[in-house]
Length: 233
Image (cartoon, rainbow, N blue to C red; front, side, top):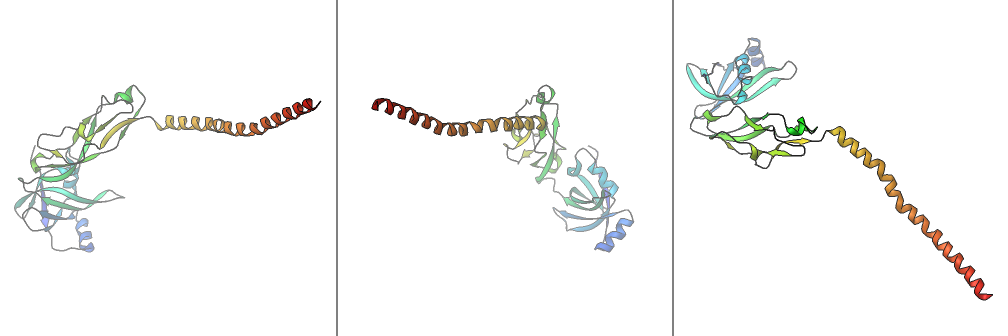
């Protein structure tokens, strides 16, 4: 993989007004902290960071931040985006030590079309979209893949079904469901409506039985009276 270098400028002014002036110049404020050196306030190009975020490994990309003639190996730890125009506003860079493991989250990539969708009319429900992992900085994977091709209707795959790269440890609990194939909601709603339609008739039966019991008792009393009259004669 080619080495990625992002150039940063040191900054001394902070606060909202200083940040506005910085953005007017086509830069955004940022902070570098982590492994060995002191925290530093920097300014960087949002275009450089956008390129990293759109890459295969996204925010887990390991790259060099060049500042004052020296380079610091970092990852993009956090960033803020303006929601209306979707512009980067601020970035936090975490300096890593290449011999120390990191704990971070990685997205899951679903591969294939489930047989439960293709031939059984189901829908794929993507329940868990990212996992927590641990690895050395140089071993950070872009994504973790899970093959759903053989997944049937009503079946699921768990974290334990994902095979991570050799030097990556998954920290998320292995019994967590990642994906499953479910019955479409329209069919479930139709079945529920059918049950509701049948239910009132079934519930009415005990009431009819209760109403019939007094009539039986009256008939028995009537027969007894007629029998007593015959006996007296």
